[in-house]
Image (cartoon, one colour):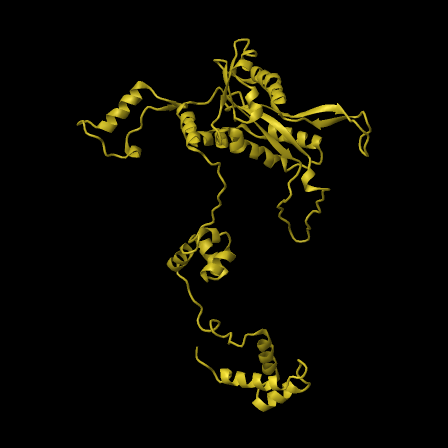
Length: 392
């Protein structure tokens, strides 16, 4: 950087500071010192005052370096190279990237808009052991329907017409006659807590509007209800929704409160254990399947995860309700694999998204809003989730 006529040299700065230090009395400069120093060194009083302030802060170095001259222009290659040098743990926001790379936030923002860098999010996935991976493969392989013709075609393509191993990639080979199980007779079961409201809500406002004042006695005690849901793959004449049931009972209030007096019938949550889960599956899910499920073979597979309450449902308990030509069997999905259940894969999230569009303040409100959302949700959404499951 080229020094100009108005720049103070380091020698002049030291002389000014030394002269000021000699005039300090009881830790302070006497009145009129700044004016006298300005006259002595032929400087402005503001310059003397700024030098003294910066000396007290412990920094007399010129701040002009790096703030003058032409602005640095970063090409796309330079931006990519600088960002690649930063550990990914330090790339969570633009501020961290700017501090680590030295690139301004505005430059990073422009690079994001141009597509030079991309914003991606990642979620924690269940840790799969070797046994879990093996069970996932067995589960997926059970849904592949291989014919003898497809197996012969597979060996023929691998060996080749001349008896030699084929070097062609698998994706470049001809389509084999492989069929996948349509999951038409599989009913997915799962439970989920649904809250009356969530802590943080996003809303778009126009000028003149204000954010709604939302209050709650405690965020730990927001009304919530656990539901058991059963769905199957939609088809013509059947939307795939077998039913949804809250784990609640109607019981008289034990003691009086400011709302209902003792003896008033109120909705009470019940503990979801093996006994209650068995009761709901046998007395609610199975009758609903018999009443609404359009199965030709009448052989229904109930798929559920391997949580403790679900162990109460087995083939022996289902054999007692396998009447009127119906046959019910249970299948446990692989451990640590919630993505193999359409409810966890996306259907529950769709229900909750619709439920949050309605105001819920009590347990009864949550039940009403969830049932409305369940009935409102179209079969196209459920069908898309099943297609996503087959792509997993």
